[in-house]
Length: 374
Ligand SMILES: *Cc1c(COP(=O)(O)O)cnc(C)c1O
Image (tube, rainbow, N blue to C red; front, side):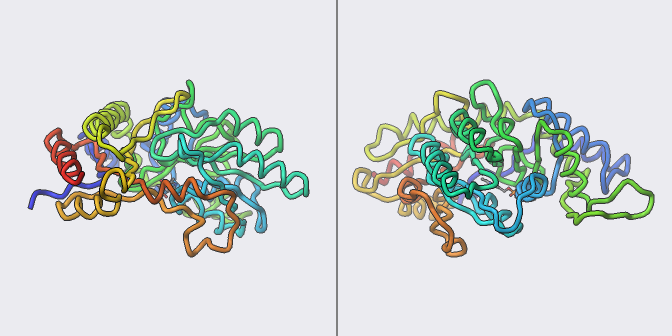
């Protein structure tokens, strides 16, 4: 049996260990330390975000986004239904209610027409949601201009879940820096990783300062421990920030390789009937964090699950698209607007191995195995 091929494993450059050794040498193991500030600075310089705070996870970032924008129990939050549960769980942490919005078929991200329609209906009955979470899936940006216009019109806060979209552009701007708040993730399979971690960014300094305070148990500035509000233990550790400092140096190299891997799959599988690949929207750069293929089972002669099982039998990991949140038993009681687009994407979509350390030989093997099924 050959070595297992994973979906998108961590890919260290070597510089991470140098940075971690520095943190050890200076005994900046915990809690804060100079690598944290350096990681935040590098992140702002790369994305163009004005202010950033490094956190233990992207999910913690979404939770803090709610806490710093005054989301209350009973509020409604609109969110893409085609996403990972990490986008949605924090809505429940604060006692708010998710309303799931379907994707549009081109970018797979939130349908701005459905969004405008929901907001118009809610405005009529005087029950506007508190915020909208826009998810940028698999490295492709949502179409932000119509979304920002609609949300500005109704005074609804835009939170961008850019967990999968570091390095993604919407026109000339980085996705995640357009709404009121953006969050990113450095979980193990994301485009860069700190083993686990997240970042919250905003142009609003006082908001980011507040998030930073809440992330370290909401200590007031006093020598003793003084607290005026409820805090959380959500700050990233300095050692993990050192890994992040190393990873920031190779982000563009990683995106280049991700895009090459996509091009390879597309060139070597795109000719087969029934296999299609998500196009890059004309409004921005798709990082191709994961290459996703849609499988029409009648035309191809096998469905996405048969392909997945065949790859698994060859020790190769692939994965269906995110199962829409409105189909998840835990969220069954909540409203969904539309749903058929995300359901069809889930039925047909398969994420192919997209790790940046994949060799050309491995890619060739994956492609010939899939071609063999036709
Ligand atoms: C990974 C991910 C998250 C959560 O990030 P963590 O750092 O794992 O908490 C949230 N939303 C989406 C869309 C993700 O892919």
